[in-house]
Image (cartoon, rainbow, N blue to C red; front, side, top):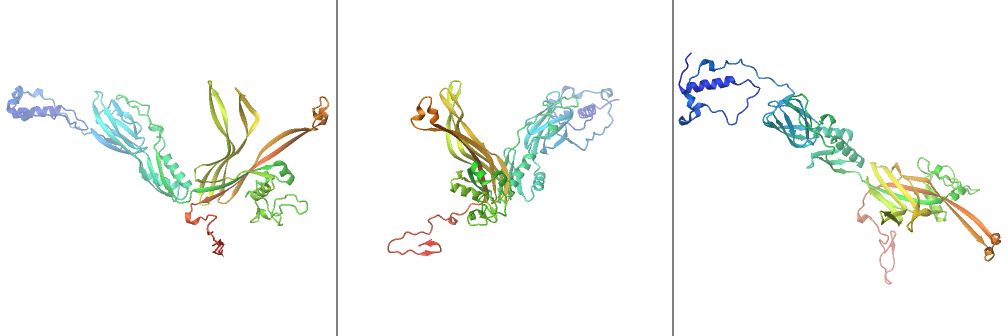
Length: 512
């Protein structure tokens, strides 16, 4: 068969032969630079063999037309460069242009990957942010560059928070540190903590199933490696507003009562303070009218009238009476106010230097002793308080003291409690049962005669005493709000300076 020998016809035949020689593929690879046909060459630059003849045997047989393979619905074909948007803790299976020999990710804290097949990669969003994933073939050529953009599913988070904390009015927005800013209003501090806890749970560590062992997946095998994740969680910025007053005032009285006096009065502090309202039982007088013994009931006579309040006998009233008569010692009466969730402290006593010797170096540390108290209130509702209280009473003691290189390190006698109670605003609670025993011995005798050798002991008197005391702590909690300065009255308000010419007048309880 003869073919035309013109340059144009020869070029068309060559182009047809090249096209037929290309194998059928799922996509067309764009060459750079593009293919240049002979007609595009200038007349002077045409190749020397442009006029050459070609025989029919030089052209390969035209292959049968093949349909391009269809990708499964769950696969997304990736071109040379594209963006992939994911929600945090979600993934997507991507189809690569060709088989990959290595897959790299810029920031494994944001996205991890697995390569189930050489021509596909599964990308999982670990945390919010943006990173880049590269796929390379066996010739180290980049066949795909994927920019992974991971965002939080704020709509799902909002539904979760509203379901867990009814009535919460909250909004979420991404922060610069790949965390979340929580704004809005809640009724109580407890609801605020619940909202933050729910957000922290949503922003927790990535799922273990999405983490791989590190490294790149091999092109020939079906299993690919993955990138590791980070245990550091994103930051939650709390900008919630609490509608309820979040301040709690705690009035505490710490009293040391003689144990022997309690026995004489027939008073059992443990039984007294186990009543449901921490009050004495009702129905009887405080002191028996005949014997004068303490009974601990409602007041029926004027002598004990100071103990009666709303039909109950309060422990605080009894302690006040005992301290006024010198039968009890008030160690401290702190009055503390703290924000909900914050800790307030009180200390009344002193500090003793403690010498510490380490490696021939002497350092001094100071140890507090006396009355120390820490309290942390938490508002559960407008009229409900959860209160954590940790009181401590300590004294210096020579018993157990240690002498080290001429320095005496004292010992301490400590009575400490640590408890959490729940009560309404205005209610009281009490702690008791912390005992202490002090024993002393005293020797007296006739002056002069007691110093005679041999017979002096006949003129001496030996006596011993033991004093048992019990620590009783009464505390009352109130939900308080700040007040305006104009609503506060000083003790001298309304008292005007008088002179000799201005007579004093008393009006409405004030002196003018």
